[in-house]
Image (cartoon, rainbow, N blue to C red; front, side, top):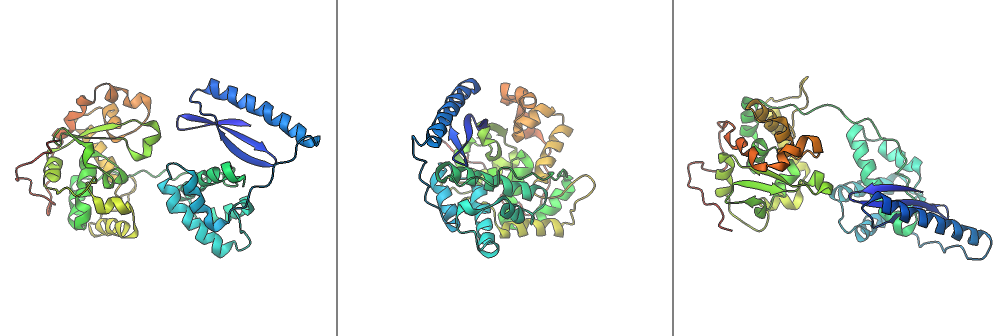
Length: 356
């Protein structure tokens, strides 16, 4: 048995009756979780002894869940279903249907089966699939005692290649060749450093004080429940002021899909047409706009600890100064404007910030 911390809670990882399962301790402090763990360990040992002596019947086997129903069952069990799992588990289930015809239930899946599936992927993709599927099976195992063959598989070394910053000229070229639906998203990332998912799921309520700043909890660091505040450049104030409101999301159509092959192709083609490529400094892609924002901010005198806080890094050491006084980051509104063609708004139009 062991203790594992997920988010702010501890879980006891136990093996009983030949199956590994996770038991929620309901504790946020390690000392209290350890006491729960030790009491549970003693209780299970006593129960195992009674079963061995014939004083207590062995537990009845749990009804098998067909592997084709794994996604449906996972979504029943997880109170906050993961987007990553809901994207990756169907991919595995299609693979299992085609390549693993003898695996009928979730308990029949072996480590060898899992490894064969993961061997299709390299680096980050391998690790992302392993992590998502291990989490899905953890929920399934907690009820159906099916084991978790994904847990002990070795991770792959992550791709250490960095995303490079773009020059103002390169950004302008990519922007010019980007499809119209992408231009606004690019502008927001360029002037705020926000990630793709945080932009396409941005809600109007996150725009505060008459478009003065955005305040939200980044999706990637949601477990830390630490919000970021990003003051808005005049270009973004003009952008938001010229947009019509249609529901809770700033980009309602993008928020529904979040990511798709069409979006990927639109991004790739914009970079290709602009002839902005990977080089020895790193990869050139949408995520480069975060590096671009950080590089421009540092170049214009903003301390690294402030930049780290703005872009949502979670290290206590680098974000402490930012968290103490977020208003000190207002200087990002003074970053130089980049002259662009075909911007999706009229920057001379009078702004009409929200009244609420």
